[in-house]
Length: 99
Image (cartoon, rainbow, N blue to C red; front, side, top):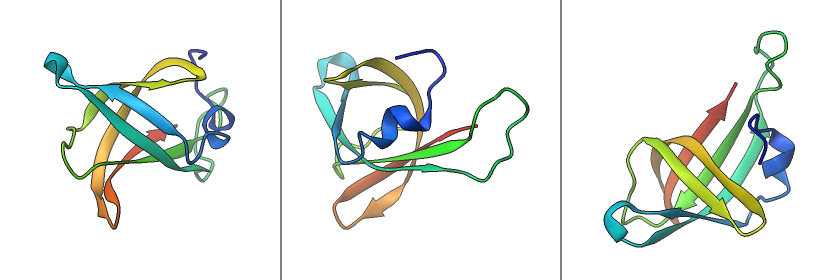
């Protein structure tokens, strides 16, 4: 994946599984991309369009806020900073904002 990520790279992957390898060989966490949307335009010139991604993982194990390497079968691995935003009916949700 290119250095600058774009909404279009992810929007077509909504509903698909991304994987995070947990530290200390603790396994792999499957995260479903459940939302990929634009944000109101507030980026500076040349910065691109801001967007948000939302992932859902299992309730446990939960991961902490921070940079995680996301892997997808059809994309190069990419490091994404995610923040836990809380549980929903199917697991724990995480958000990543690009601006």
